[in-house]
Length: 76
Image (cartoon, rainbow, N blue to C red; front, side):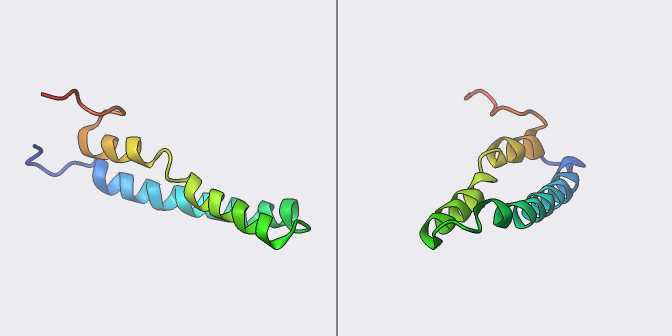
């Protein structure tokens, strides 16, 4: 268990916020042009998928913030 603060946590939080902001801006800019003419239900499904898609790399990113490795530590 980590006892000392590490630089990865504040940098990781800032990186996460920056990455989410960029992701949100890109989606808000380009998705309406691509799916604007689709039926409402199809647009809703696309936005739900895009809203959850950013979670896929989050586990490894949080592991890196805590341990400095991109994969989980082996079980003891």
